[in-house]
Image: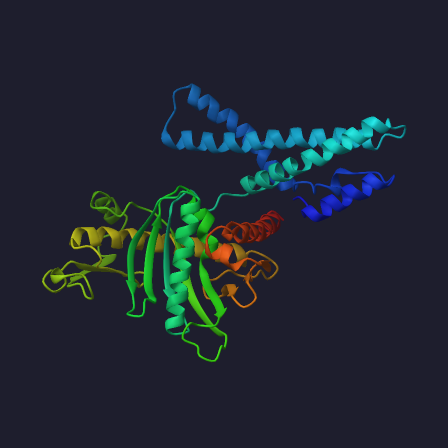
Length: 397
């Protein structure tokens, strides 16, 4: 893995100013042999898949795998090319009888290609790790207030706006599946769907308890209050339409899901009190309960409920997978369980801190506008990469 940028440029400046011998390791930490072994294995797999496709075996599964392996190998070949270029430049710089003009030109070129080497190496290492479950899926996000009364509901609404802004900045299609608001405009619950492939993989780090520290609008003495809101990110496993309902129901054994219908409650018009449009699903093995009443049609509420149930079960399977992997490790690893406070939004100090990786962004308005959220997500992703690589190394012992 590459060293941090500040260290790279410090080393570059030192070698530029002194006669020290520059080594590749001073700029780029070599990729772990286990990951390189996976790249070499993919090279062989690519040949097998290519022969299958040329022989007419162009089924969906083979096509997807061929595309995935091709993308990884393209990255791998670019990495090898970049490393060869880096090595050649360092040979010129370290020449015992250097040509001053040639050395200066090599140093300039080294400074130019280092960012590319950083990006290529980082991308390749992430691609070479075993894939995560459902990483190619769209996402469903659930937001609810935690402790802090009405201020928690207002904060949950702020988070909802942040994710709406974030999706808009990325031009991701977003739909509010359900939303309930208290009389004081505090959010009670919201469920949104982000229909972009891979959105789940990007946003899954947002799952957890988010904490805010600020002076509420109703505070007369200017005291800072602490409130929380919970965010759950699920992989979207179906479309949640009447057309997808039959396929969703087929995913469950007979008697595995109890289906209750009832009259919807709350705002919504005269139909609320006259039709049994609300649907409640109870997944017997896990006890998971899903309630939907936003649509006037019972089939549409049923379809939405099955969509959310499948997503929650997929997340449950992923969490069990992570727990099992961590039990295999010999050392204790920090968790990102949803019960942990993963992030703090400190308004008085204009700071957002992610506690999993210890990284802070000193631009709270930029984060809440969705513009700086990527910066936090990327740092958590880097932290997770280190954990997953360590897990891979230990499991291979």
